[in-house]
Image (cartoon, rainbow, N blue to C red):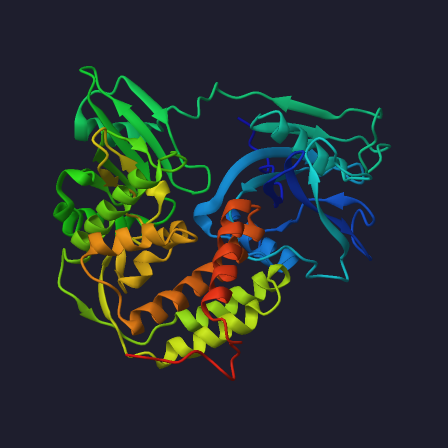
Length: 472
Protein backbone atom coordinates (compact mmCIF):
# COMPACT_ATOMS: atom_id res chain seq x y z
CA UNK A 1 0.00 0.00 0.00
CA UNK A 2 1.38 3.41 -1.01
CA UNK A 3 2.35 5.77 1.81
CA UNK A 4 2.04 8.90 -0.34
CA UNK A 5 -0.82 11.38 -0.55
CA UNK A 6 -4.19 9.84 -1.32
CA UNK A 7 -5.63 10.45 -4.75
CA UNK A 8 -8.81 12.52 -4.63
CA UNK A 9 -11.23 13.45 -7.41
CA UNK A 10 -14.12 15.91 -7.68
CA UNK A 11 -17.62 14.44 -7.99
CA UNK A 12 -20.37 15.78 -10.21
CA UNK A 13 -23.95 14.63 -10.76
CA UNK A 14 -25.90 14.25 -14.00
CA UNK A 15 -29.69 14.06 -14.39
CA UNK A 16 -31.14 11.53 -16.83
CA UNK A 17 -34.72 12.84 -16.86
CA UNK A 18 -36.50 10.19 -18.89
CA UNK A 19 -39.92 9.89 -20.48
CA UNK A 20 -41.53 7.60 -23.06
CA UNK A 21 -41.96 9.27 -26.45
CA UNK A 22 -43.49 8.20 -29.73
CA UNK A 23 -40.12 6.94 -31.00
CA UNK A 24 -39.11 5.30 -27.72
CA UNK A 25 -37.39 6.58 -24.56
CA UNK A 26 -36.44 10.26 -24.54
CA UNK A 27 -34.07 12.24 -22.30
CA UNK A 28 -33.96 15.94 -21.52
CA UNK A 29 -30.88 17.77 -22.81
CA UNK A 30 -29.77 21.40 -22.57
CA UNK A 31 -27.27 23.35 -24.67
CA UNK A 32 -24.53 25.21 -22.86
CA UNK A 33 -24.21 28.90 -23.53
CA UNK A 34 -22.03 31.82 -22.55
CA UNK A 35 -18.65 31.84 -20.77
CA UNK A 36 -18.91 28.23 -19.53
CA UNK A 37 -17.02 25.03 -20.23
CA UNK A 38 -18.12 23.32 -23.47
CA UNK A 39 -20.27 26.25 -24.59
CA UNK A 40 -22.46 25.43 -27.58
CA UNK A 41 -22.52 21.69 -26.76
CA UNK A 42 -25.48 19.59 -25.64
CA UNK A 43 -25.32 18.06 -22.17
CA UNK A 44 -27.50 16.55 -19.46
CA UNK A 45 -28.51 18.88 -16.62
CA UNK A 46 -25.59 18.53 -14.23
CA UNK A 47 -23.44 20.18 -11.60
CA UNK A 48 -21.09 19.83 -8.65
CA UNK A 49 -21.88 18.96 -5.06
CA UNK A 50 -22.21 21.82 -2.62
CA UNK A 51 -20.37 21.51 0.71
CA UNK A 52 -22.13 19.07 3.03
CA UNK A 53 -24.50 17.90 0.27
CA UNK A 54 -25.01 14.27 -0.70
CA UNK A 55 -25.33 13.16 -4.32
CA UNK A 56 -29.11 12.76 -4.29
CA UNK A 57 -29.60 16.18 -2.74
CA UNK A 58 -27.26 17.62 -5.39
CA UNK A 59 -29.08 16.18 -8.40
CA UNK A 60 -32.45 17.31 -7.01
CA UNK A 61 -31.06 20.83 -6.49
CA UNK A 62 -29.47 20.97 -9.95
CA UNK A 63 -32.73 19.80 -11.52
CA UNK A 64 -34.65 22.59 -9.79
CA UNK A 65 -32.05 25.27 -10.56
CA UNK A 66 -31.50 24.35 -14.22
CA UNK A 67 -34.86 22.98 -15.37
CA UNK A 68 -37.44 24.06 -12.77
CA UNK A 69 -38.68 20.51 -12.14
CA UNK A 70 -39.24 19.24 -8.60
CA UNK A 71 -38.08 15.73 -7.72
CA UNK A 72 -38.66 13.61 -4.62
CA UNK A 73 -35.66 11.74 -3.26
CA UNK A 74 -37.60 8.47 -3.50
CA UNK A 75 -37.81 8.91 -7.29
CA UNK A 76 -34.03 9.20 -7.81
CA UNK A 77 -32.36 5.96 -8.93
CA UNK A 78 -28.68 5.32 -9.63
CA UNK A 79 -27.94 4.72 -13.32
CA UNK A 80 -24.24 4.94 -14.27
CA UNK A 81 -20.91 6.02 -12.81
CA UNK A 82 -18.27 7.42 -15.20
CA UNK A 83 -14.60 7.92 -14.34
CA UNK A 84 -13.65 10.74 -16.70
CA UNK A 85 -10.52 12.64 -17.60
CA UNK A 86 -10.97 15.69 -19.84
CA UNK A 87 -8.56 16.59 -22.64
CA UNK A 88 -7.83 19.96 -21.05
CA UNK A 89 -6.01 18.61 -17.96
CA UNK A 90 -4.62 15.56 -16.23
CA UNK A 91 -6.98 15.54 -13.23
CA UNK A 92 -9.82 13.05 -13.45
CA UNK A 93 -13.30 13.22 -11.93
CA UNK A 94 -16.23 10.94 -11.10
CA UNK A 95 -19.59 11.59 -12.70
CA UNK A 96 -22.64 9.91 -11.17
CA UNK A 97 -25.66 9.69 -13.49
CA UNK A 98 -29.12 9.39 -11.92
CA UNK A 99 -32.30 8.31 -13.69
CA UNK A 100 -35.58 10.03 -12.79
CA UNK A 101 -38.94 9.07 -14.32
CA UNK A 102 -41.28 10.91 -11.95
CA UNK A 103 -41.25 14.65 -11.25
CA UNK A 104 -43.53 17.65 -11.06
CA UNK A 105 -43.41 20.77 -13.20
CA UNK A 106 -42.58 21.30 -16.87
CA UNK A 107 -38.87 21.52 -17.78
CA UNK A 108 -37.83 24.98 -18.92
CA UNK A 109 -34.67 27.09 -19.17
CA UNK A 110 -34.01 28.56 -15.73
CA UNK A 111 -30.50 29.91 -16.36
CA UNK A 112 -30.60 31.74 -19.71
CA UNK A 113 -27.09 33.10 -19.15
CA UNK A 114 -25.76 29.51 -19.21
CA UNK A 115 -28.25 27.68 -21.41
CA UNK A 116 -29.83 28.77 -24.72
CA UNK A 117 -31.82 25.64 -25.67
CA UNK A 118 -33.53 22.69 -24.00
CA UNK A 119 -35.54 19.79 -25.36
CA UNK A 120 -36.49 16.13 -25.31
CA UNK A 121 -34.51 13.80 -27.59
CA UNK A 122 -34.94 10.10 -28.40
CA UNK A 123 -32.15 7.97 -26.95
CA UNK A 124 -31.39 6.70 -30.46
CA UNK A 125 -31.30 10.19 -32.02
CA UNK A 126 -29.15 12.28 -29.68
CA UNK A 127 -28.31 15.74 -31.02
CA UNK A 128 -24.88 17.08 -31.82
CA UNK A 129 -22.52 18.45 -30.96
CA UNK A 130 -22.61 16.82 -27.51
CA UNK A 131 -20.08 16.78 -24.69
CA UNK A 132 -18.13 13.53 -25.12
CA UNK A 133 -18.17 12.91 -21.36
CA UNK A 134 -21.98 13.11 -21.32
CA UNK A 135 -22.20 10.85 -24.37
CA UNK A 136 -20.05 8.22 -22.63
CA UNK A 137 -22.45 8.14 -19.69
CA UNK A 138 -25.47 7.86 -21.97
CA UNK A 139 -23.80 5.08 -23.98
CA UNK A 140 -23.33 3.07 -20.79
CA UNK A 141 -26.88 3.89 -19.70
CA UNK A 142 -28.37 2.76 -23.02
CA UNK A 143 -26.37 -0.46 -22.79
CA UNK A 144 -27.77 -1.12 -19.32
CA UNK A 145 -24.26 -1.17 -17.81
CA UNK A 146 -23.36 0.29 -14.42
CA UNK A 147 -20.11 2.12 -15.17
CA UNK A 148 -17.66 3.40 -17.77
CA UNK A 149 -14.12 4.77 -17.95
CA UNK A 150 -13.72 7.76 -20.25
CA UNK A 151 -10.13 9.02 -20.24
CA UNK A 152 -9.51 11.51 -23.02
CA UNK A 153 -6.12 12.50 -24.38
CA UNK A 154 -4.78 16.06 -24.63
CA UNK A 155 -5.51 16.35 -28.35
CA UNK A 156 -9.06 14.97 -28.16
CA UNK A 157 -12.00 17.32 -28.79
CA UNK A 158 -14.36 18.13 -25.93
CA UNK A 159 -17.29 17.31 -28.21
CA UNK A 160 -18.29 13.79 -29.14
CA UNK A 161 -17.28 13.14 -32.75
CA UNK A 162 -18.97 10.29 -34.66
CA UNK A 163 -16.21 8.17 -36.15
CA UNK A 164 -13.60 9.95 -34.00
CA UNK A 165 -11.48 8.48 -31.21
CA UNK A 166 -13.47 6.17 -28.96
CA UNK A 167 -12.26 6.71 -25.41
CA UNK A 168 -15.20 4.99 -23.69
CA UNK A 169 -14.63 1.67 -21.97
CA UNK A 170 -17.92 0.21 -20.78
CA UNK A 171 -17.81 -1.93 -17.63
CA UNK A 172 -20.13 -4.82 -17.04
CA UNK A 173 -21.65 -5.66 -13.67
CA UNK A 174 -23.28 -8.65 -12.00
CA UNK A 175 -26.15 -10.11 -13.99
CA UNK A 176 -29.25 -8.34 -12.74
CA UNK A 177 -32.77 -9.70 -12.86
CA UNK A 178 -35.14 -6.85 -12.05
CA UNK A 179 -37.78 -9.31 -10.94
CA UNK A 180 -35.37 -10.72 -8.34
CA UNK A 181 -36.07 -9.52 -4.83
CA UNK A 182 -33.43 -7.29 -3.24
CA UNK A 183 -31.73 -9.23 -0.46
CA UNK A 184 -33.19 -7.24 2.42
CA UNK A 185 -36.74 -7.54 1.10
CA UNK A 186 -36.31 -11.28 0.61
CA UNK A 187 -35.20 -11.67 4.23
CA UNK A 188 -38.18 -9.64 5.41
CA UNK A 189 -40.65 -11.59 3.26
CA UNK A 190 -39.32 -15.02 4.24
CA UNK A 191 -39.50 -14.13 7.90
CA UNK A 192 -43.16 -13.29 7.30
CA UNK A 193 -44.34 -16.19 5.11
CA UNK A 194 -41.54 -18.76 4.98
CA UNK A 195 -39.34 -19.83 2.08
CA UNK A 196 -40.06 -18.18 -1.27
CA UNK A 197 -39.53 -20.23 -4.40
CA UNK A 198 -40.46 -17.54 -6.90
CA UNK A 199 -40.77 -13.74 -6.96
CA UNK A 200 -42.31 -12.11 -10.04
CA UNK A 201 -42.41 -8.34 -10.35
CA UNK A 202 -45.89 -7.06 -11.20
CA UNK A 203 -45.38 -3.34 -10.56
CA UNK A 204 -47.79 -0.86 -12.11
CA UNK A 205 -45.70 1.17 -14.58
CA UNK A 206 -47.02 4.57 -13.47
CA UNK A 207 -46.16 4.38 -9.79
CA UNK A 208 -42.85 4.56 -8.02
CA UNK A 209 -43.79 1.65 -5.75
CA UNK A 210 -42.60 -1.85 -6.64
CA UNK A 211 -44.72 -4.97 -6.22
CA UNK A 212 -43.76 -8.66 -6.42
CA UNK A 213 -45.99 -11.72 -6.45
CA UNK A 214 -44.44 -14.26 -4.07
CA UNK A 215 -44.92 -18.01 -4.36
CA UNK A 216 -44.06 -20.50 -1.63
CA UNK A 217 -43.06 -24.15 -2.03
CA UNK A 218 -46.61 -25.29 -1.37
CA UNK A 219 -48.10 -22.95 -3.95
CA UNK A 220 -49.18 -20.25 -1.49
CA UNK A 221 -49.25 -16.72 -2.92
CA UNK A 222 -48.66 -13.32 -1.33
CA UNK A 223 -47.77 -9.85 -2.55
CA UNK A 224 -44.82 -7.79 -1.37
CA UNK A 225 -44.88 -4.05 -1.93
CA UNK A 226 -42.09 -1.54 -1.40
CA UNK A 227 -43.54 1.95 -1.19
CA UNK A 228 -41.88 4.87 -2.93
CA UNK A 229 -41.98 7.01 0.19
CA UNK A 230 -42.80 6.93 3.90
CA UNK A 231 -46.10 8.79 3.48
CA UNK A 232 -47.56 6.08 1.26
CA UNK A 233 -46.18 3.32 3.49
CA UNK A 234 -47.64 4.82 6.64
CA UNK A 235 -51.04 5.38 5.03
CA UNK A 236 -51.33 1.85 3.70
CA UNK A 237 -50.20 0.18 6.91
CA UNK A 238 -52.58 2.28 8.99
CA UNK A 239 -55.48 1.48 6.64
CA UNK A 240 -54.81 -2.27 6.74
CA UNK A 241 -54.64 -2.23 10.53
CA UNK A 242 -57.74 -0.12 11.18
CA UNK A 243 -60.22 0.21 8.30
CA UNK A 244 -59.64 -2.57 5.79
CA UNK A 245 -60.66 -5.44 8.14
CA UNK A 246 -64.23 -4.10 7.83
CA UNK A 247 -64.20 -5.25 4.20
CA UNK A 248 -63.55 -8.87 5.18
CA UNK A 249 -62.51 -11.18 2.33
CA UNK A 250 -63.13 -8.43 -0.24
CA UNK A 251 -59.71 -6.88 0.50
CA UNK A 252 -56.22 -8.20 1.28
CA UNK A 253 -55.03 -8.79 4.83
CA UNK A 254 -51.76 -7.34 6.11
CA UNK A 255 -49.29 -10.11 6.96
CA UNK A 256 -46.22 -8.05 7.92
CA UNK A 257 -44.82 -4.52 7.65
CA UNK A 258 -41.28 -3.15 7.79
CA UNK A 259 -41.26 0.61 8.38
CA UNK A 260 -37.54 1.06 7.78
CA UNK A 261 -37.67 -0.74 4.42
CA UNK A 262 -41.09 0.81 3.62
CA UNK A 263 -42.40 -2.65 2.69
CA UNK A 264 -45.49 -4.75 3.37
CA UNK A 265 -46.56 -8.32 2.68
CA UNK A 266 -50.27 -8.87 2.12
CA UNK A 267 -52.44 -11.83 1.24
CA UNK A 268 -53.43 -12.46 -2.36
CA UNK A 269 -56.95 -12.04 -3.73
CA UNK A 270 -58.41 -14.48 -6.24
CA UNK A 271 -59.75 -12.42 -9.10
CA UNK A 272 -59.12 -10.74 -12.46
CA UNK A 273 -58.31 -7.02 -12.94
CA UNK A 274 -61.43 -4.97 -13.64
CA UNK A 275 -59.29 -2.39 -15.47
CA UNK A 276 -59.69 -3.11 -19.19
CA UNK A 277 -62.33 -5.79 -18.69
CA UNK A 278 -65.27 -5.70 -21.12
CA UNK A 279 -68.62 -6.19 -19.38
CA UNK A 280 -72.12 -5.96 -20.73
CA UNK A 281 -74.36 -3.13 -19.52
CA UNK A 282 -76.18 -5.14 -16.86
CA UNK A 283 -73.02 -6.78 -15.52
CA UNK A 284 -71.20 -3.46 -15.15
CA UNK A 285 -74.19 -1.97 -13.32
CA UNK A 286 -74.09 -4.92 -10.89
CA UNK A 287 -70.39 -4.31 -10.31
CA UNK A 288 -71.03 -0.63 -9.62
CA UNK A 289 -73.80 -1.51 -7.17
CA UNK A 290 -71.43 -3.84 -5.31
CA UNK A 291 -68.67 -1.20 -5.39
CA UNK A 292 -71.12 1.24 -3.79
CA UNK A 293 -71.73 -1.24 -0.96
CA UNK A 294 -68.00 -1.83 -0.56
CA UNK A 295 -67.29 1.91 -0.44
CA UNK A 296 -70.01 2.44 2.12
CA UNK A 297 -68.50 -0.30 4.32
CA UNK A 298 -65.11 1.40 4.16
CA UNK A 299 -66.58 4.82 4.92
CA UNK A 300 -68.32 3.36 7.98
CA UNK A 301 -65.28 1.43 9.23
CA UNK A 302 -64.35 4.15 11.75
CA UNK A 303 -66.09 7.16 13.33
CA UNK A 304 -66.47 10.33 11.31
CA UNK A 305 -64.29 13.35 12.00
CA UNK A 306 -65.07 17.03 11.70
CA UNK A 307 -63.46 18.56 8.62
CA UNK A 308 -61.15 21.52 8.99
CA UNK A 309 -60.32 24.20 6.45
CA UNK A 310 -59.53 22.48 3.16
CA UNK A 311 -56.37 23.33 1.24
CA UNK A 312 -57.75 21.82 -1.97
CA UNK A 313 -58.86 25.17 -3.41
CA UNK A 314 -55.39 26.60 -2.77
CA UNK A 315 -53.60 23.61 -4.28
CA UNK A 316 -55.64 23.82 -7.46
CA UNK A 317 -54.12 27.22 -8.23
CA UNK A 318 -50.66 25.67 -8.15
CA UNK A 319 -51.77 22.89 -10.49
CA UNK A 320 -53.36 25.46 -12.80
CA UNK A 321 -49.95 27.04 -13.40
CA UNK A 322 -48.70 23.71 -14.80
CA UNK A 323 -51.89 22.69 -16.61
CA UNK A 324 -52.82 26.07 -18.12
CA UNK A 325 -51.16 25.54 -21.58
CA UNK A 326 -53.24 22.39 -22.08
CA UNK A 327 -56.67 23.58 -20.91
CA UNK A 328 -59.56 24.44 -23.18
CA UNK A 329 -61.56 27.64 -23.45
CA UNK A 330 -63.29 28.48 -20.19
CA UNK A 331 -61.65 25.67 -18.21
CA UNK A 332 -59.65 27.93 -15.92
CA UNK A 333 -62.63 30.21 -15.21
CA UNK A 334 -64.77 27.19 -14.40
CA UNK A 335 -62.20 25.70 -12.03
CA UNK A 336 -61.56 28.96 -10.21
CA UNK A 337 -65.29 29.53 -9.85
CA UNK A 338 -65.74 26.08 -8.37
CA UNK A 339 -62.83 26.74 -6.02
CA UNK A 340 -64.67 29.84 -4.80
CA UNK A 341 -67.88 27.89 -4.34
CA UNK A 342 -66.04 25.11 -2.52
CA UNK A 343 -64.66 27.55 0.03
CA UNK A 344 -68.22 28.62 0.91
CA UNK A 345 -69.54 25.11 1.51
CA UNK A 346 -70.15 24.06 5.12
CA UNK A 347 -67.31 22.15 6.70
CA UNK A 348 -67.89 18.49 5.86
CA UNK A 349 -67.61 15.31 7.85
CA UNK A 350 -64.53 13.25 7.02
CA UNK A 351 -64.62 9.47 6.72
CA UNK A 352 -62.06 6.73 6.02
CA UNK A 353 -61.51 6.70 2.26
CA UNK A 354 -59.62 4.58 -0.24
CA UNK A 355 -58.13 7.64 -1.91
CA UNK A 356 -57.79 6.15 -5.39
CA UNK A 357 -61.08 4.37 -6.05
CA UNK A 358 -61.04 3.39 -9.72
CA UNK A 359 -61.19 0.22 -11.82
CA UNK A 360 -57.40 -0.09 -11.77
CA UNK A 361 -57.54 -0.96 -8.06
CA UNK A 362 -60.39 -3.45 -8.30
CA UNK A 363 -60.38 -7.18 -9.01
CA UNK A 364 -63.45 -9.14 -10.03
CA UNK A 365 -63.90 -12.54 -8.38
CA UNK A 366 -65.13 -15.55 -10.31
CA UNK A 367 -68.55 -14.86 -8.81
CA UNK A 368 -68.55 -11.29 -10.13
CA UNK A 369 -67.87 -9.67 -6.73
CA UNK A 370 -65.50 -6.64 -6.74
CA UNK A 371 -62.44 -6.87 -4.49
CA UNK A 372 -60.54 -3.75 -3.45
CA UNK A 373 -56.76 -3.38 -3.06
CA UNK A 374 -53.96 -0.76 -2.99
CA UNK A 375 -54.63 1.44 0.04
CA UNK A 376 -51.48 3.61 -0.11
CA UNK A 377 -53.59 6.75 -0.63
CA UNK A 378 -56.11 5.93 2.11
CA UNK A 379 -56.89 8.83 4.43
CA UNK A 380 -59.68 10.65 6.22
CA UNK A 381 -61.41 12.74 3.54
CA UNK A 382 -64.88 13.62 2.32
CA UNK A 383 -67.05 10.76 1.11
CA UNK A 384 -67.47 12.55 -2.21
CA UNK A 385 -63.70 12.78 -2.71
CA UNK A 386 -63.68 8.99 -2.83
CA UNK A 387 -66.25 9.08 -5.66
CA UNK A 388 -64.30 11.38 -7.97
CA UNK A 389 -62.27 8.83 -9.93
CA UNK A 390 -64.85 6.06 -9.97
CA UNK A 391 -67.20 8.81 -11.18
CA UNK A 392 -65.21 9.03 -14.40
CA UNK A 393 -66.87 5.74 -15.38
CA UNK A 394 -70.27 7.40 -14.97
CA UNK A 395 -69.72 9.84 -17.85
CA UNK A 396 -72.45 9.05 -20.36
CA UNK A 397 -73.66 6.21 -18.12
CA UNK A 398 -76.24 7.53 -15.65
CA UNK A 399 -77.23 3.91 -15.00
CA UNK A 400 -73.78 3.25 -13.46
CA UNK A 401 -74.03 6.31 -11.23
CA UNK A 402 -77.49 5.25 -10.08
CA UNK A 403 -76.28 1.71 -9.42
CA UNK A 404 -73.30 2.89 -7.35
CA UNK A 405 -75.37 5.23 -5.21
CA UNK A 406 -78.04 2.57 -4.74
CA UNK A 407 -75.33 0.27 -3.44
CA UNK A 408 -73.96 3.09 -1.31
CA UNK A 409 -77.37 3.28 0.31
CA UNK A 410 -78.41 6.87 -0.29
CA UNK A 411 -78.42 9.68 -2.85
CA UNK A 412 -76.14 12.68 -2.50
CA UNK A 413 -77.52 15.90 -1.06
CA UNK A 414 -77.41 19.06 -3.25
CA UNK A 415 -74.43 20.28 -1.22
CA UNK A 416 -72.63 16.96 -1.74
CA UNK A 417 -73.38 17.09 -5.47
CA UNK A 418 -71.66 20.48 -5.69
CA UNK A 419 -68.80 19.28 -3.50
CA UNK A 420 -68.31 16.27 -5.78
CA UNK A 421 -68.19 18.51 -8.86
CA UNK A 422 -65.68 20.83 -7.19
CA UNK A 423 -63.45 17.97 -6.12
CA UNK A 424 -63.70 16.46 -9.60
CA UNK A 425 -62.53 19.76 -11.07
CA UNK A 426 -59.56 19.91 -8.68
CA UNK A 427 -58.61 16.32 -9.50
CA UNK A 428 -58.96 17.04 -13.23
CA UNK A 429 -56.51 19.95 -13.14
CA UNK A 430 -54.08 17.87 -11.10
CA UNK A 431 -54.42 15.06 -13.65
CA UNK A 432 -53.70 17.37 -16.58
CA UNK A 433 -50.67 18.86 -14.80
CA UNK A 434 -49.32 15.45 -13.84
CA UNK A 435 -50.17 13.71 -17.11
CA UNK A 436 -48.59 16.32 -19.36
CA UNK A 437 -45.55 16.65 -17.12
CA UNK A 438 -44.98 12.89 -17.03
CA UNK A 439 -46.06 12.06 -20.58
CA UNK A 440 -49.04 10.05 -19.34
CA UNK A 441 -51.77 10.53 -21.96
CA UNK A 442 -54.38 8.42 -20.18
CA UNK A 443 -54.24 10.51 -17.01
CA UNK A 444 -54.23 13.72 -19.07
CA UNK A 445 -57.28 12.62 -21.02
CA UNK A 446 -59.13 11.70 -17.83
CA UNK A 447 -58.65 15.24 -16.58
CA UNK A 448 -59.71 16.88 -19.83
CA UNK A 449 -62.73 14.59 -20.09
CA UNK A 450 -63.83 15.57 -16.59
CA UNK A 451 -63.57 19.28 -17.40
CA UNK A 452 -65.66 18.82 -20.56
CA UNK A 453 -68.30 17.01 -18.53
CA UNK A 454 -68.39 19.78 -15.91
CA UNK A 455 -69.05 22.35 -18.62
CA UNK A 456 -72.23 20.42 -19.47
CA UNK A 457 -73.25 20.29 -15.79
CA UNK A 458 -72.98 24.06 -15.39
CA UNK A 459 -74.75 25.11 -18.57
CA UNK A 460 -74.96 28.75 -17.48
CA UNK A 461 -71.57 30.51 -17.75
CA UNK A 462 -69.59 29.99 -14.55
CA UNK A 463 -66.83 32.47 -13.74
CA UNK A 464 -65.05 33.54 -10.55
CA UNK A 465 -67.44 36.50 -10.42
CA UNK A 466 -70.48 34.28 -10.97
CA UNK A 467 -69.89 30.94 -9.18
CA UNK A 468 -72.52 28.22 -8.90
CA UNK A 469 -75.03 28.46 -6.10
CA UNK A 470 -74.06 26.92 -2.79
CA UNK A 471 -76.70 24.76 -1.15
CA UNK A 472 -76.41 22.90 2.15
